[in-house]
Image (tube, rainbow, N blue to C red; front, side, top):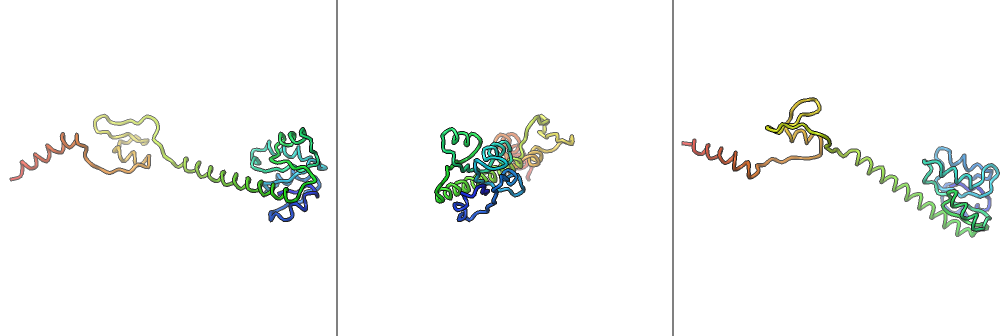
Length: 196
């Protein structure tokens, strides 16, 4: 979290969260740094870059999309509040503010950041799982008589071998009723007739 103004000092001191003090308008630099905080309490008026501009810049950086920003300011007109949200602030608090309210809003922001992180983790897991799923696609050259398939190395192999190599399918072997009647039954009858 970034604290940019002295007025939020008393409100943030009991939050049990990592804080960076940036009273000279260095909020943007702190948010760009390695290991930057994901929650920022920004004042509208800061010496080098105001909070509105920090919000705008953060929202134009795709890698900073999950940064949660609370704009803390004395500006209480509706046009200022709307300007804050349009610039990219996630929350807006008018000062002087109640320290309990600030703490509550920071807790909400922290919860949102944690949920976004968990969601991003689940999305990454799903993408990894999807990448590992093997699918058969395209045209498969198959012999119309023996049903062997020509593989990528131009060798003919059994259908079940090819499918096992290119999918997660497992095979169990049996005899269908049609093949039993046309192939197996005559063989069994012939074998029985040949016995003395």
